[in-house]
Image 1 (cartoon, rainbow, N blue to C red):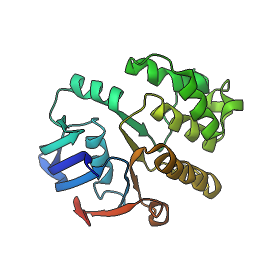
Image 2: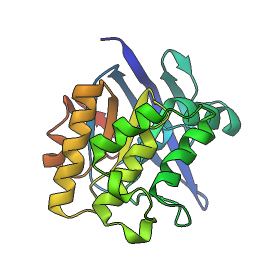
Image 3: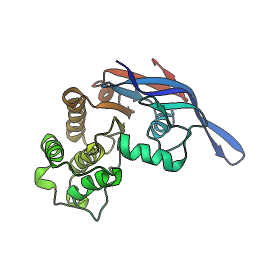
Length: 223
């Protein structure tokens, strides 16, 4: 399989007062098209920083980042935003749903932002897969945590992203809903061929991935 996403010797240093704190110390990895990769690490290990760089949410201090062969890590904020809206889907731990919109509105707004035309057939396919058809007219405050996360997954997928990034997707869920979300991610990868990069502190959750990487103190093992 060819590499869809790639990082080459990526570093990230945060200034804290007069001290420079390294979050990433030279990380290189590849995620193949159609692969499901999980990155495991404790809080503060650097895994969230790496995901944010792959997600085009922040620039690395040094190194190179590619998606589909195009380098984007050091582009301007505006250029990275365009790539993120078009090619990257993100599932956040805290769902990040807009409280004033119902579930359907939260899903459709991501497609509108990406500039893609409506695709009702694909939307219905996602709704059926995620089992949220009866909840589309409900606002986030009227949904359970598991339902909110499934809406967030639909939002992340509605514009057909090349790369789906999952940031501790079960971190705010009970064990039953956590397993349901993991099962959905596994099915998205298996049946839809969706490329997924997931970070988690839970080694059991990571077990559904094709490949599990480990991060500690800003360094990556098993790449």
